[in-house]
Image 1 (spheres, rainbow, N blue to C red):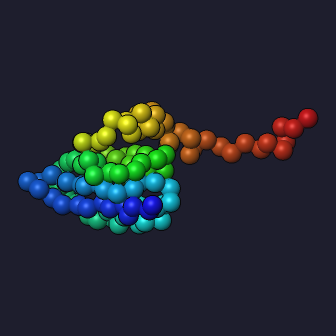
Image 2: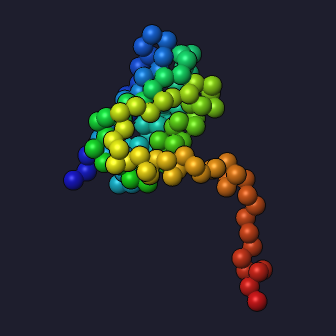
Image 3: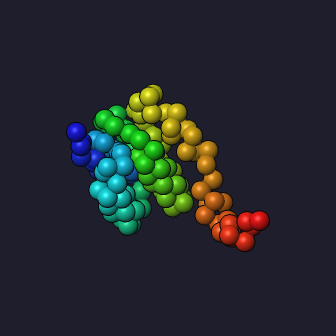
Length: 118
């Protein structure tokens, strides 16, 4: 069963309010990427805010990566977003990804594995 992912946006009292719902999973990768990119391209002058995750029905590693990317994108704008009402069963996955330093991994020089073979 494929549950459509959703991500809505509003500004309330000068704060960004995001609401996520549905299945934030790999089978919905294209739709999730579209939602996050559309949100990322908006010029927002509001301060930080929150993303309400209470309506998430399914969540996997892809969803966690996308959530982390979304949070880091807003943080880079100087508008930190707090995650609220996120089901406890998904917290372990989110915590594991928050510990990753994606910028250091992306900046690492590619290794020449062929040249290192005996």
